[in-house]
Image (cartoon, rainbow, N blue to C red; front, side, top):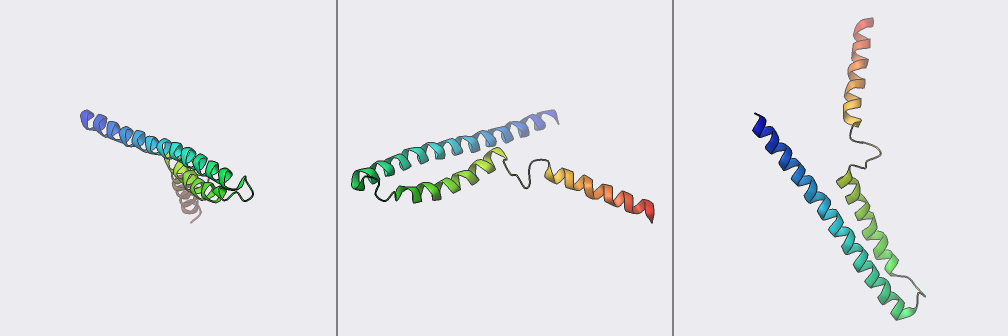
Amino acid sequence: MGDMDKENKYLKAKEKVEEIKKFYTSLVSYVIVISLLAAINYYLDQWRYMWFLWAAFGWGIGLIFQAAKTFGLNPFFGRDWEERKIKEFMKKDDNRDRWE
């Protein structure tokens, strides 16, 4: 049983590392591509219309969601949210049972 636990923990940790690696790869790609688009934008019209910001904004939103998923940054349903809600409902049921 101990070996299976260790193996499961190892596989879980390996998946997490892969997820983090994918995020940082996406972040580096974002910086390189948006910088390139900004340079092209400046070369073509000297910032008269900064169209590269549309790409930066759209891709940036996707990157924010990827970061939230990767690092567990969910302000609405955080890591412990589910456990807290289960305990809260169990406590309410206990209180209701006492008064019936």
